[in-house]
Length: 360
Image (cartoon, rainbow, N blue to C red):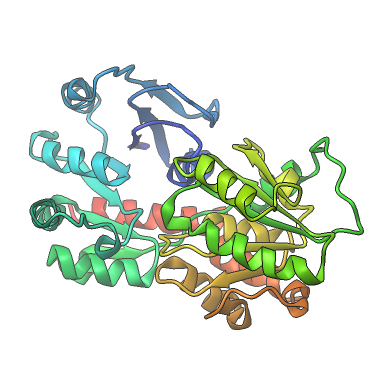
């Protein structure tokens, strides 16, 4: 008899956590598991759910109505395992856990490093720290990196046995397939095309990328910087580029549903975040054989660099040099597949499901 798994997430908007869950429900073994993907609202929905996966849109317009609708569904359907992700969704599921059917297990997946996500306000910071103690109600918690795992154990005071590190799944076949689409843009072979892809917020430290690009531009005036993504800092970044007289060399492409058709044309991808949980876009750039330059920061990025043996790409000063554009060694593809392929990562999730079920 198939085990019933619920994957629960706030929305299917275009974020990394959403992409991870869609990849997981697509790949998980349907001969062993009956899979349902539940989200609170379809507003700004970007990702499509596979036809062999049950899809439930709770159509929640007010977050306050979500708990009762979720709990009613869980108590009626009696899933064997519920898997949730993103901090506020995890918190909601943890608060509801004591009202689950007795047999239902809860697995939570973290997306942020706790110490890097605490409020500057002392009272809010105190409350946030106390909230991590609720994770003792989770049967298993999945972290994306070694730092995230250690940080979480420190703040939650939970046994290491209940916490496991699993990287994000990457569908390399889908990346290569989507990269074949024509972006309808004329990239010149005479220009160096440098890319950033991600949310335009303070954490990504995009002004540092612009500054590094400007310095490189002095010696290579035909270069261009392409910025893919939207976010609260977009207007400030456009103004910053204007102030530096870089408007002709920095192209803001906005949010792109298919980043791969753009990214495959990159000569270099740059990441300069203050911290990262697990930056999928870095893995995806490497999968497209795009050279990367990463300013050192804590989080899952360090795990990626270590797994792939790319220590020379992890730098203390963000300076674009000619060697930054060097191609990878031939074994890079095998390392990518063994560490991050959707097949291998999904199997690890299935092992977690079996481990919590075996505990009864």
